[in-house]
Image (cartoon, rainbow, N blue to C red; front, side, top):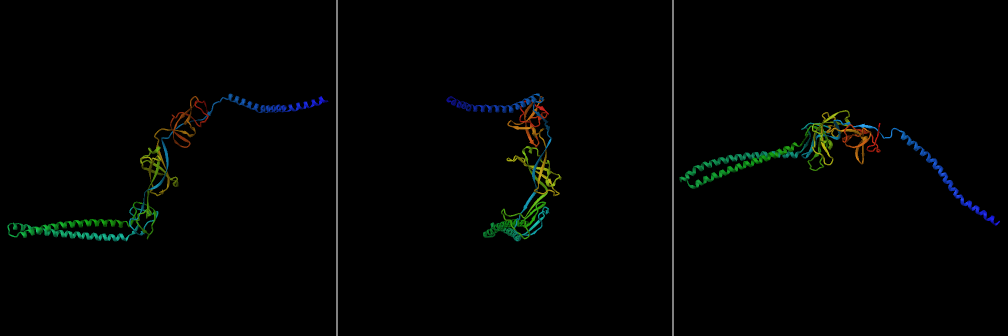
Length: 417
């Protein structure tokens, strides 16, 4: 009994100790089966794909080709600009007074010299009358001085005769020496009177000259009472009304009475970039396109240019003038100026998609006759959106990859489609 009791617990202990091992073995077996189920089909598919690739006749990258085209002998340059009047001026008052009349308003077409307004300036008128009276007085003084000179000359002539008669008599002691001396002194005094009369005439003439200048100045000032148009044009601004007090002032707050602009010929100033500045010549024609006048062609002419580039913008200021006798264009409009310029060198045009820009710079991919590729660096010019100008690096007969892939390498064989 004692031995059996000890044997039974020993067998149970062995069963308990063997149970985890069986579980581990089972888990490993299950994982092996699952791996086999997933890996085996994948390996089979890889073998099939490799076999398909090996059996295929096309094993190289497929590319499409394009060829460079020759650029046009001329190019178009389009630049924005503002239409401005050829001449414009602000008319200010030169005399103080009240606006007596106003003859024009905004939009009025005027001719050169036409009276636009009249200023009443009584002070100027009175000063002119006074200056004229002073001038007349100085002229009368001149006449008096001239009469005094004539009288002084007559007296001098009389004393000369007396002197010439008395001096010989005095030498012969026919008359006293006192009479001779008096005759000599009298003649010298009359000669001094002649010199004084001449000086008075000179002073009177100078006074007349000064008074003439003063009268001319006041006449000029009186002329400023009439505000006239300096050139043919259109009144673009009016800041006064009849009865307003106008002043010459002198400060920056004084507004002009009128503003006038000449619109028969308009000018447009544009900034031409450095790359095309050498192609702009005086007398050259340019097309002017105004959005508000669609379908109506305008032709401008290059009148002048700065002859130098702006240091900051690297552009050359150029002035284009356009005829506007019909008044269809208005100063202040926005316009596009199109220049047709000759090309200074023969260029090639390629699609932008065939240009590669990476760490090595700008280049294109050339397909050689043996279907190998070569990377050729190029220098580009103008960017025209879908096309780009090539200045150097191509001869024009090369076959270029239309849209190069990043996976292409130098010397790689490709298949051309």
